[in-house]
Amino acid sequence: MKRDIEFEFSAGLRWTHWLRAIAIFVLTVTGFYLTYVFIAPEASDEPILFLNAKFRMWHEIAGFLLIAITLFKTYLFFADRISSKERVSFLDFVSPKVWFGQLKYYLFMGEHPQLRGVYNPLQFIAYVGLYTMIFIISITGLILYVHSYQAGGIGGFLYDYMRPIEAMLGGLAMVREIHHIVMWGILIFLPIHIYMAIFNSIMGKEGSMDAIISGYKFHKQHPKH
Image (cartoon, rainbow, N blue to C red):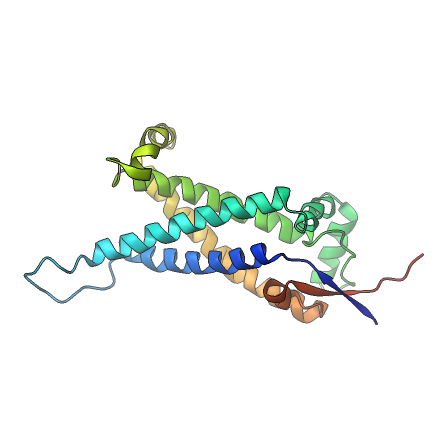
């Protein structure tokens, strides 16, 4: 069967995808340290170690990187011309026929349904869930951040805006708990996402894994009726 080569993912989308992966990795490692200290520096009388401060610094840098990437990718989704195929995926998401065909495909009971957009319905709802979790973990992260840097800079600017949200969420201890719970939600999403990406790449033979690097994907030529 002949296949068409189609450009699906812009350079901005691909770069931010991998930068987000790096940010999540750094946030996970440093976040675990800040919660459960697993490295202790050698004892010293000199005040030069500050290992906790270094981990916190990298956690905050990766956190602001994740926020910036999320804002940029949200802009691409709604405004970028090339990313219009992502927006069209909503039509597949609300189509019962595509849902039924996609479930049959995953159960090895049929061919992959023809999609109008980039993502199938399950991928679309998974990404909506991921962005919801990133939004929550970003807001709770900013609340925790302003308590350390409320004297000036970004922390000082955000302090008065974050405190009412902190109160709505039940206080600082609850904010920290929500932050940790959502982190586990993202960590559960990641292996499922990787597995399904590999599954679709192998089963569909459309270069799904290659597309997030090169931007190009192979599509089967469906017969015209």
